Image (cartoon, rainbow, N blue to C red; front, side, top):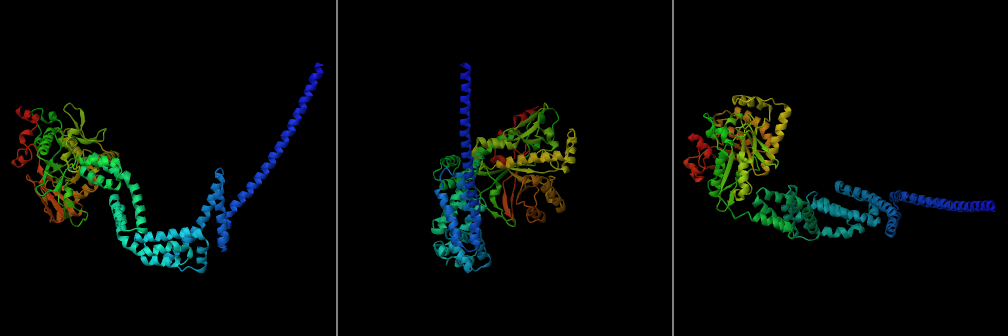
Length: 628
C-alpha cells in the first residue's frame, strides 16, 4: 500500500504539472498577441506622428492652407485632451506643434525681411498664405509689427521703412487688430525716440541708475506702446542692476567713499523703495557724511619720500648716511598726519579739479570739500626703492600681507626681514584713515610717483633695470643679483597685484620720469622723449592710464614749452613742481600745482607752521642720536 500510495501521488503531481504548463502556455500566447497588437498600434501611431509635420509642410507648399491648419489644430486638440499620465506622448506632440510653428515663422520672416530690406510688394499668393494660416501667421506678424516699432523707437530703422512695412501688412484682415493701434501711435513713438535712445546710451555705459531715471521720466509722459516698452525696460534693468549696484555701493562703504555711497544708495532707494538693505546702507553712508561746499582757496600739497622704518639701522653708530636728512621716520610722518587732521585738513583727489575726457582741452572744475575742511594732497615721491637708501633704514620693497594689505618690507639692524603696514607712508596713511574716516573726502588717499631706472616698488620689472640695480647694490656693499625673464615676469605680476590693491583703496599714480631726471627744465626734448617712452613701456604699462607727472626736485617746464606739450600729448594733464607755499594754476590743457617737500631738513620752515607744530613732529630716536 505504501508503494502504491507513493506511485499514486507521483502521478497526481505530473497531472498537476502538466495542467500548469498548459495555463502558462495560454498566458504566454495571450501576452505575445497583446504585445503584437500594441507594437502594431505604436508603430501606426509613430508612423502617423512622424508623417504629420512633413504632411503639414507639403500642404503649405501646395497652397492647401485649410488642410495645413487642420493638421496643426488636430495635434493641438490632442495636446489639450491628453492625460496627465501621458507625458511622453504629449511632449512629442508639443514638439510637432513647435516644428510646424517654426515652418510658418520662417516663411513669414522671409517675407517680412524682404519687405523691410527690398521694399518687396506682397503677391496675391503671399497674401493668401498670410491670411489663410490664421493664428499661426497672426502671432508672427504681430511680433514683427511690434518689433519694427521697437526698432524705430531705438533709432535702428527710419520712419518711411516702418510706414511701408505697415502699408504691406495692415490691409490683410488677420493683422488689422494689431496694426491699426500701432499705426495710430507712430507719431508718439517718434516723439519719444530721443529720450529712449538717451536711456539706452546710459545703459550701454553701465549707468543703470541714469537709464532707469530716464525711462521713468519717459514713462510718465506716455502710455500705449511707449509706456509698455518703458515698463519692460525698467523691469529688465532693475533685475540686472540690483546685485552689481549693491556690491558697488557696499564696496564704496568699505573704502570710505561715503559721499559716493550716499548718492548711490539714495538713487537706489528711489528705484527700490521697499528694500531694507538699501535703507540700512544709506543710513551707514549718511552717518559719515556732512554738508559739502565748493572750496575756493589754496590747496596744500605735501610730499614725502620713502620713510625710515628702522631707526636703529639709520641712526646707530658713529657714521650715518649723508642722505638721512632727506627722509622722515615713520613716527614723524604719522605725527604730521595727526597735526594736519587736528587742523581740519582733508585728503582730496586732484583729478577732481579737472574734466579731461577730451585729450585736446581741459575744463576747470570747482573742488568740493566738507564744510569747515581744507583740502590736502599727499604725494609719495619716487617709490622705486633704490638700493642706495638701504643703509638709511628704509624699506626695500612693497608686499601684500595675508589680508591683502599693502605693507613695507625691510631688513632690520639684526638682519631680520620685517613686514609691516606701518613701515611705509602708504600703510600709515591707510591706517590713519581707518581710525579717522573723516580725514578723507570720498575715499581719496594720495599720489604715488614712480620712476623706473632701477626698480619699481622694489622689483626689477624690465631687463633695462638690471645693470642699474646691480650698480646700486655694489655701491651699498651688497651682492649683485641675477635676473631671468621669468623673474621679470614674476615681478611684473607682483607689482600689478599691488597696483590693483592701491587703486582700489583710493591711491592714484604719477610718473616722476623713468630716470628721475634731476633737472627737466634744462634737459633737451630728445632726452625727455626717450625717457618717457621707456617709462610708458616698462612702468606705465603696469599702472594703466596715468595722467600726472611729478617733476623731480620741482624743476618744472612751462606749460607752453614744446617739451611740456609733448608730455600733454602723451596723456599727462596734471603737473607738480615745487614750492613751500600752496599754489596751483590752470594752463593750456593742464593743471599745475606746487608741492611742499617734507624732509627732516625742511620741517622747521616757517611756511609749514600752518600745517603742524615742528616741536611735536621730530622723532625722539633722531634727537637721541643727535645728542650722542
